[in-house]
Amino acid sequence: DLLLSNSCIPFLGSTEGLDFRTLLLDEERGRLLIGAKDHIFLLNLVDLNKNVKKIYWPAAKEKVELCKLAGKDAHTECANYIRVLQPYNRTHVYVCGTGAFHPLCGYIELG
Image (cartoon, rainbow, N blue to C red; front, side, top):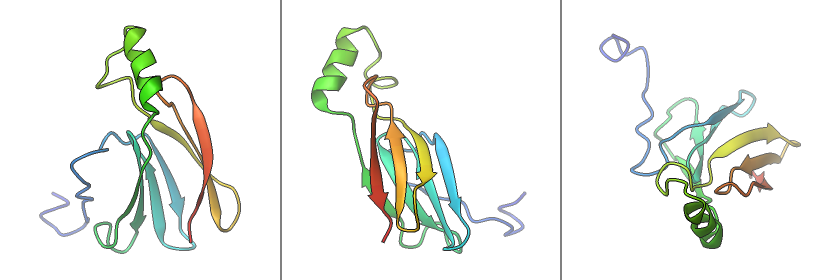
């Protein structure tokens, strides 16, 4: 109904990384950050599909191999699921992912 009434703009996404896990709304700058499987998306709130920026951040290959050796599913568990998107200051966001059961964190400069 929302689509038919033109009351929403769906995010078309991409062919990879569509397993969304966390969101961070930056109303001041009109942006939305989305944490997904192996990806972080930065969207414009006015048009979600215009100038989409994306960071590919997979788990290290050796961590994925250890995950598979531990009996985990390679397609659904042995990835870097982004779980934390937290504002750090005006220019950076603190980000953490599962890292195929070896958590890793870092800072992203939003620029």
